[in-house]
Amino acid sequence: MVAVAVSQLWVLSLVVLLAFVSPGPDFVAVVSFALGGRRGGIGVALGIALASFAWALLAMAGLGLVLGRLVWLYEAIRIGGALYLVWLGVKMLRGALKPAVGAAVAAVEASFLAGVRRGLAVSATNPKAAAFFGSVFVSILPTDTTLATRASALAVVAVLGAVWFTVVALLFSDERVRSLYARGRRALDAVMGTILVALGARLAVSA
Image (cartoon, rainbow, N blue to C red; front, side, top):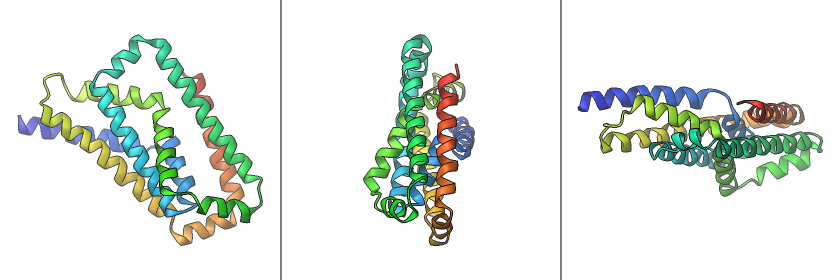
Protein backbone atom coordinates (compact mmCIF):
# COMPACT_ATOMS: atom_id res chain seq x y z
CA MET A 1 0.00 0.00 0.00
CA VAL A 2 2.84 2.39 0.85
CA ALA A 3 4.52 1.81 -2.54
CA VAL A 4 1.25 2.41 -4.38
CA ALA A 5 0.59 5.59 -2.39
CA VAL A 6 4.09 6.90 -3.12
CA SER A 7 3.74 6.19 -6.83
CA GLN A 8 0.41 8.02 -6.87
CA LEU A 9 1.96 11.02 -5.15
CA TRP A 10 4.84 11.12 -7.63
CA VAL A 11 2.43 11.16 -10.57
CA LEU A 12 0.27 13.77 -8.87
CA SER A 13 3.32 15.93 -8.14
CA LEU A 14 4.46 15.85 -11.77
CA VAL A 15 1.03 16.70 -13.16
CA VAL A 16 0.42 19.52 -10.67
CA LEU A 17 3.89 20.99 -11.18
CA LEU A 18 3.43 21.04 -14.95
CA ALA A 19 0.11 22.83 -14.45
CA PHE A 20 1.73 25.43 -12.21
CA VAL A 21 4.68 26.00 -14.56
CA SER A 22 2.41 26.52 -17.58
CA PRO A 23 2.00 30.30 -18.12
CA GLY A 24 -1.43 31.57 -17.15
CA PRO A 25 -3.23 34.16 -15.00
CA ASP A 26 -1.44 32.98 -11.84
CA PHE A 27 1.99 33.47 -13.40
CA VAL A 28 1.12 36.91 -14.74
CA ALA A 29 -0.26 37.98 -11.35
CA VAL A 30 2.91 36.93 -9.54
CA VAL A 31 5.17 38.63 -12.07
CA SER A 32 3.22 41.88 -12.08
CA PHE A 33 3.34 42.18 -8.28
CA ALA A 34 6.94 40.94 -7.94
CA LEU A 35 8.17 43.60 -10.37
CA GLY A 36 6.78 46.17 -7.96
CA GLY A 37 8.29 44.62 -4.83
CA ARG A 38 9.32 41.34 -3.24
CA ARG A 39 6.74 41.37 -0.43
CA GLY A 40 3.82 41.78 -2.78
CA GLY A 41 5.12 39.12 -5.15
CA ILE A 42 5.59 36.56 -2.38
CA GLY A 43 2.13 37.45 -1.08
CA VAL A 44 0.60 36.63 -4.46
CA ALA A 45 2.58 33.37 -4.56
CA LEU A 46 1.26 32.25 -1.17
CA GLY A 47 -2.26 33.42 -2.02
CA ILE A 48 -2.22 31.23 -5.14
CA ALA A 49 -0.89 28.30 -3.10
CA LEU A 50 -3.71 28.72 -0.56
CA ALA A 51 -6.33 28.93 -3.30
CA SER A 52 -4.90 25.85 -5.03
CA PHE A 53 -5.02 23.97 -1.73
CA ALA A 54 -8.66 24.99 -1.32
CA TRP A 55 -9.53 23.88 -4.89
CA ALA A 56 -7.80 20.55 -4.27
CA LEU A 57 -9.68 20.08 -1.00
CA LEU A 58 -12.98 20.90 -2.66
CA ALA A 59 -12.13 18.50 -5.48
CA MET A 60 -11.69 15.74 -2.92
CA ALA A 61 -15.08 16.66 -1.51
CA GLY A 62 -16.61 16.18 -4.95
CA LEU A 63 -16.87 19.75 -6.20
CA GLY A 64 -15.83 18.67 -9.69
CA LEU A 65 -18.80 16.33 -9.88
CA VAL A 66 -21.11 19.03 -8.53
CA LEU A 67 -19.96 21.56 -11.13
CA GLY A 68 -20.40 18.89 -13.81
CA ARG A 69 -24.04 18.50 -12.84
CA LEU A 70 -24.83 22.14 -12.02
CA VAL A 71 -23.89 23.72 -15.33
CA TRP A 72 -25.26 27.11 -14.29
CA LEU A 73 -22.90 27.24 -11.28
CA TYR A 74 -19.87 26.42 -13.41
CA GLU A 75 -20.93 29.02 -15.97
CA ALA A 76 -21.38 31.66 -13.25
CA ILE A 77 -17.87 31.00 -11.91
CA ARG A 78 -16.45 30.97 -15.43
CA ILE A 79 -17.99 34.28 -16.45
CA GLY A 80 -17.09 35.89 -13.14
CA GLY A 81 -13.50 34.74 -13.48
CA ALA A 82 -13.31 35.95 -17.07
CA LEU A 83 -14.58 39.39 -16.13
CA TYR A 84 -12.11 39.60 -13.26
CA LEU A 85 -9.16 38.78 -15.54
CA VAL A 86 -10.32 41.32 -18.11
CA TRP A 87 -10.64 43.92 -15.35
CA LEU A 88 -7.09 43.21 -14.18
CA GLY A 89 -5.83 43.42 -17.76
CA VAL A 90 -7.56 46.72 -18.42
CA LYS A 91 -6.16 48.06 -15.13
CA MET A 92 -2.64 47.17 -16.26
CA LEU A 93 -3.22 48.68 -19.69
CA ARG A 94 -4.37 51.90 -18.06
CA GLY A 95 -1.28 51.80 -15.84
CA ALA A 96 0.88 51.51 -18.94
CA LEU A 97 -0.38 54.95 -19.98
CA LYS A 98 0.68 56.60 -16.71
CA PRO A 99 4.03 58.34 -16.22
CA ALA A 100 6.75 55.87 -15.26
CA VAL A 101 7.63 57.45 -11.90
CA GLY A 102 4.14 57.57 -10.43
CA ALA A 103 3.28 54.04 -11.49
CA ALA A 104 6.57 52.66 -10.19
CA VAL A 105 6.04 54.21 -6.76
CA ALA A 106 2.52 52.80 -6.58
CA ALA A 107 3.81 49.36 -7.48
CA VAL A 108 6.53 49.42 -4.80
CA GLU A 109 3.93 50.19 -2.13
CA ALA A 110 2.03 46.93 -2.78
CA SER A 111 1.91 45.09 0.55
CA PHE A 112 2.23 41.41 1.39
CA LEU A 113 -1.46 41.18 2.34
CA ALA A 114 -2.49 42.94 -0.86
CA GLY A 115 -0.52 40.31 -2.74
CA VAL A 116 -2.16 37.48 -0.83
CA ARG A 117 -5.59 38.90 -1.64
CA ARG A 118 -4.68 39.21 -5.33
CA GLY A 119 -3.38 35.64 -5.46
CA LEU A 120 -6.50 34.29 -3.77
CA ALA A 121 -8.78 36.29 -6.05
CA VAL A 122 -7.05 35.26 -9.29
CA SER A 123 -7.08 31.55 -8.44
CA ALA A 124 -10.47 31.51 -6.73
CA THR A 125 -12.19 32.96 -9.80
CA ASN A 126 -10.66 30.40 -12.17
CA PRO A 127 -13.13 27.55 -12.78
CA LYS A 128 -10.48 25.76 -14.81
CA ALA A 129 -8.74 25.09 -11.51
CA ALA A 130 -11.81 23.27 -10.22
CA ALA A 131 -12.02 21.21 -13.38
CA PHE A 132 -8.27 20.49 -13.31
CA PHE A 133 -8.07 19.37 -9.70
CA GLY A 134 -11.34 17.49 -10.00
CA SER A 135 -10.14 15.47 -12.97
CA VAL A 136 -6.64 14.93 -11.54
CA PHE A 137 -7.78 13.73 -8.15
CA VAL A 138 -10.43 11.45 -9.60
CA SER A 139 -8.04 9.88 -12.11
CA ILE A 140 -4.95 9.58 -9.91
CA LEU A 141 -6.47 8.97 -6.48
CA PRO A 142 -9.15 6.25 -6.57
CA THR A 143 -11.96 6.12 -4.06
CA ASP A 144 -10.15 3.57 -1.88
CA THR A 145 -7.11 5.84 -1.41
CA THR A 146 -6.13 6.10 2.25
CA LEU A 147 -6.72 9.24 4.26
CA ALA A 148 -2.97 9.63 4.78
CA THR A 149 -2.36 9.61 1.02
CA ARG A 150 -5.12 12.16 0.44
CA ALA A 151 -3.68 14.43 3.13
CA SER A 152 -0.24 14.06 1.55
CA ALA A 153 -1.71 14.95 -1.83
CA LEU A 154 -3.13 18.18 -0.42
CA ALA A 155 0.26 19.00 1.09
CA VAL A 156 1.92 18.36 -2.28
CA VAL A 157 -0.39 20.85 -3.99
CA ALA A 158 0.19 23.54 -1.36
CA VAL A 159 3.97 23.08 -1.19
CA LEU A 160 4.53 22.91 -4.95
CA GLY A 161 2.39 26.00 -5.49
CA ALA A 162 4.14 27.96 -2.75
CA VAL A 163 7.65 26.93 -3.83
CA TRP A 164 7.23 27.47 -7.57
CA PHE A 165 5.47 30.81 -7.42
CA THR A 166 7.78 32.07 -4.65
CA VAL A 167 10.75 31.26 -6.90
CA VAL A 168 9.05 33.25 -9.68
CA ALA A 169 8.42 36.13 -7.27
CA LEU A 170 12.04 36.16 -6.07
CA LEU A 171 13.32 36.08 -9.64
CA PHE A 172 11.22 38.97 -10.88
CA SER A 173 11.74 41.03 -7.71
CA ASP A 174 15.52 40.93 -8.17
CA GLU A 175 16.96 44.44 -8.36
CA ARG A 176 18.49 43.86 -11.80
CA VAL A 177 15.21 42.55 -13.19
CA ARG A 178 13.31 45.43 -11.58
CA SER A 179 15.80 47.89 -13.06
CA LEU A 180 15.13 46.50 -16.51
CA TYR A 181 11.40 46.65 -15.79
CA ALA A 182 11.66 50.30 -14.75
CA ARG A 183 13.14 51.16 -18.13
CA GLY A 184 10.54 49.23 -20.08
CA ARG A 185 7.64 49.36 -17.63
CA ARG A 186 5.01 50.77 -19.94
CA ALA A 187 5.71 48.24 -22.68
CA LEU A 188 5.77 45.30 -20.24
CA ASP A 189 2.57 46.44 -18.51
CA ALA A 190 0.92 46.73 -21.92
CA VAL A 191 2.02 43.20 -22.82
CA MET A 192 0.92 41.66 -19.51
CA GLY A 193 -2.34 43.58 -19.56
CA THR A 194 -3.03 42.36 -23.08
CA ILE A 195 -2.28 38.78 -22.00
CA LEU A 196 -4.73 39.03 -19.08
CA VAL A 197 -7.45 40.47 -21.31
CA ALA A 198 -6.84 37.69 -23.85
CA LEU A 199 -6.95 35.01 -21.14
CA GLY A 200 -10.19 36.48 -19.78
CA ALA A 201 -11.73 36.61 -23.24
CA ARG A 202 -10.67 33.04 -23.92
CA LEU A 203 -12.17 31.89 -20.64
CA ALA A 204 -15.40 33.75 -21.40
CA VAL A 205 -15.91 32.05 -24.77
CA SER A 206 -14.62 28.58 -23.85
CA ALA A 207 -17.13 25.89 -23.05
